[in-house]
Length: 106
Image (cartoon, rainbow, N blue to C red; front, side, top):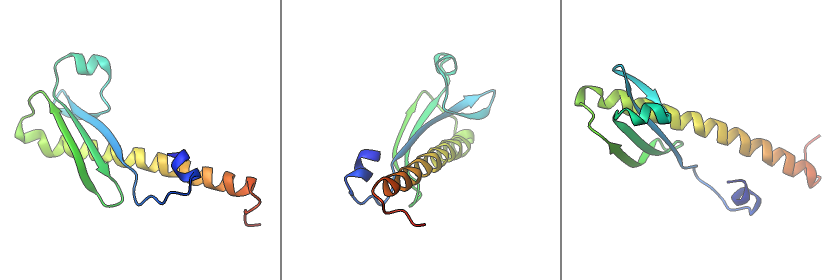
């Protein structure tokens, strides 16, 4: 992403992806190997956070309809958390880049 920023390519939104599933009937985000290997359903979701659009979705296993909304919400929240982290990194990079070019505001 930083290479795109450095190349001055305009970006409208960042693409963020996250997985979520169920453990003891509770949603969990970013399942680890042990959680995945127990055959639990895993939903992978890709989001454009600024426009709040889901642009990709994949489900491994079966997920009861009663849990669908809860797991989707957990995955979207994970994507938004990733977006906030990425956005902060891009902004910090831009400040550093501006300072190195002598463009920083005093």
